[in-house]
View 1 (cartoon, rainbow, N blue to C red):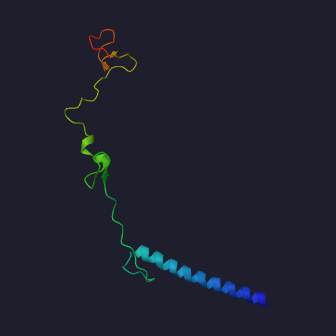
View 2 (view 1 turned 60 degrees about the vertical axis):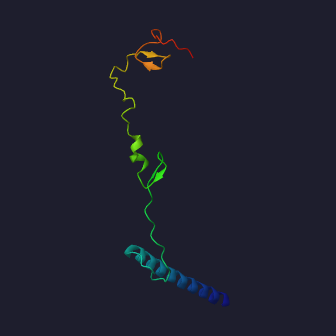
View 3 (view 1 turned 90 degrees about the vertical axis):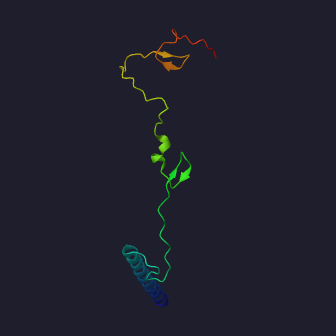
Length: 116
C-alpha cells in the first residue's frame, strides 16, 4: 500500500511539472509570435536580434560593397578578346593550329618559325 501511495505521489508531481512546462512553452511561443520585448513574460532577458549577414565578394576580397555575383570585375573588359562568333556547323571540322594554339588555319600551313 505504501508503494502505491508513493508511486501516485510521483505521478502527481510529474503531471504538475508537465503542466508548468506546457504553460512556459505556450508563453514562449506567444512571445515569439507577438514579437520580443526587452523582458519576456518569463523574466528572461532576450538577446538582440541578429543583424542581416554582410555581403562579401570572393573576387575582390571585400565586405559590404557587393556580392560575388554582382562583382564588376566579372564583366568583360573592353580590351579583352570578344566571345566567340563562330556560327559554323557542329558536324564540320574547324581548322586548328597546334603550334599557334589558335583556330583559323591548320598546323600544316602554319608559318610561325618559333620552336619551343
